View 1 (spheres, rainbow, N blue to C red):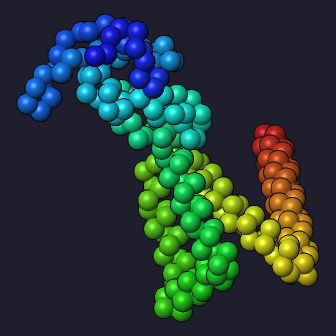
View 2: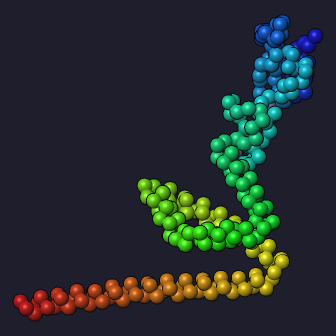
Length: 221
Ligand SMILES: [Zn+2]
Ligand SMILES: [Zn+2]
C-alpha cells in the first residue's frame, strides 16, 4: 500500500485527501508534490499505473516556440504551445515549411499557377488589387500596416529561399538577378529624387506666383 513519502516518477505523496469512485470501487486520492514544487491531487490507481507521472506543467514541457512554461490550467497535457500567439506562430512555421518544401521540389510551381491564372483571366491582377482594397477599406491604418508587414515578410521569405537555391545551382542566374535588382533599386531612387525635385519646383513656382500676386495687389492700391 502506498504511504506518505512514497514517490511515483516525479510525484511524492504528501497525504491522503479523500477518495473517488473508480469503476466499481473507491480509490484513495493523494495530495502529491511534483519535483518542480507544484502540488496536485491524483487518484491512487492513476499513480500506481503510471498514468500521471508528473504535474501537468512538467508533462507538457516548455513551449516549442518561446520556451516558457505552459501553465494554463484549461490546456490538455498534449498541448505544446503556451499561448494563442505561440500557437499561431507554430501553425505559421508549419505551413511555411510545407510550402518551401513544395517550392523546392518544383521551383516553377508559383510561376506556373500564376501564368495559368493570367491566361484564364487577363484582368486577374487588377481584380485582385481591387479585392484587396475592398478588404482593407474599413481597417485602421495600423491594421493595414500589419497586413503589409506580414505580406512583405512572407514574400521576403520566398525570395530568400529562391535566392539561396539559385545561388548554389545557377550562379549565373543569381548574378543576373543581383544586377537587375541593383538596376531596379537605382531606378527607384532616381524616380524618388525626380519626384521630390518636381514637388520642390512646384512649391517654388507657387511661392513666386504668390509673391507676384501680392505685388500686383500693392501696385493697384
Ligand atoms: Zn511539475
Ligand atoms: Zn510560448
